[in-house]
Image (cartoon, rainbow, N blue to C red; front, side, top):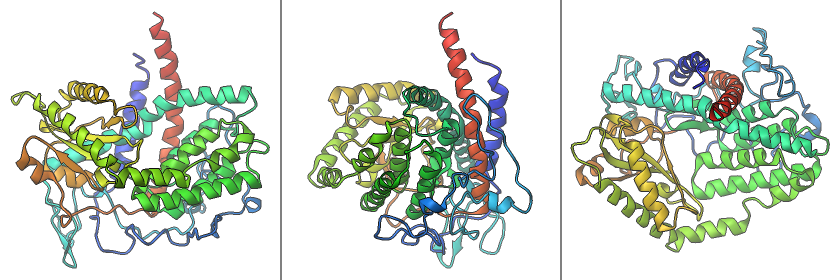
Length: 478
C-alpha cells in the first residue's frame, strides 16, 4: 500500500466536503426563475444553424483564451507540474467565469447539498424538517436529521470519488494512449494533463450533488466544449474549417438527440467522450469520426428499441433477476439489501440497445457489509442471461438507507423501486404528484469557484494516479 498519499487524501476529503456542501443556506425552490426547462443559460443561443451566434469564431478565439487561462499558466509538458497562479483582486470575478457567456449570479440554490440543514424557512426561521412552502409550493420533503446526515455522507464520499479516485483510475491509461499517439505523430493536444482535467469541468455548473455534477443547459455545454475543442486541439491541422464544421454538426445532433431522449447529463458525456477519443486520433480521421456520431440511423434504432417492446422485455428480465437475488438475502443479516433503486435511461424509458442499468442498493442502515456479495450474485445471474454484453450493470459505490427522506434528498430524476416488500416499495416510490427536486443548470459565483478548485483537484489527482500506478506495479512484482 502506498501510504504517503494518505495525508493528501485526507486533505482532499476535507476540501471536497466543504466545496460540495457549501454554506448551510437556502432550499431548492420550485417554480422560481432560473430552474431548468425551456429556458437556457442567459445570453447563450444555438439556433438552427450549425454555428452558435454566441460561440466564438475560430479566427477570434486566441489559443490562450481557455477556460482556465487566467487561473492556470500555460502548462508545460506532462513531466513538469503545472504552476497555479492566483489572479489579481480586480480580475478575480472574471478569472472565475471560465469563459461562460451569460453569467447568472442570481442562480437559486439547488440540489441535496443545499438542503442538509435549511436556515431559510417561510419567515427566515430555522427549519430542521425541511418542510416549507413558498407561494403554496412544497419545496422540500420531510426528512429526519439522520437522513440529512446520511445524505451528506453520501454526497461527500461520491464527490471524493468523482474528483479524486475516478481520475486516479482513468488518467494512467489515457496518458499511455497519448504517449503512443505522440510517438506516431497523432497527438492532437499538446498538454494532455490540462486537457484531461479540463474535460472534468467543462460543461458543468460547478454544483455537485450526491449522484454527480449538474450539467449546464445544453446550449451552454455546446459553447464551452466548442471553445475547448478550439483551445486544446492545438496540433497543426487538428482544427481547420472542415474539422470545426464536423464538430459543430455533431454537437447539433447531440442537442437534438438529448431533447428527444430526456437525459440531461448525456449530451455533455457524448461530446466529452468523443473529444477525449479524438485527442489521440490520426488527424485525417477527425472529420469522418465526428461525422459518424449520433446519426439518424442511431436515433431510429433507439426509438424502435423503446417503442417496439425490446426495452420493456429487457427491463422485465432484469427485474426478475433482481427479485431472485433479493429473495436470497437472509432477513436477519446485518446490512441486508432491502430494495434496489433503478436509475437512468431504463427508469425514464429512454434506454437504447446499448444502455446500461444504473443501480443503487438500499440496505439496512446504508451498510456496505453485504453489498459486494449481492453485486456478484446479481452480476453473475445477469451474465448468464446473455444480456450483459449489450446492457451491463453499473452499481453505485455507496448504498443508501431505505428511507424516503434519503431518496428525496439525493435523487433528482425519475427512479424505479424494486423490492420484495410491497409496502416498502410503495412508500419509497416517488409518484408524479410528489415532491421532485429540480436541478438548476445555470452558473453562479459559487459554481465558478467550485469548478476552479475542481480543476486543480483533477490536476493533482492525475499525479496521484501516476504514483499509485507506479508503486502498485512495483508492489505486484515483489
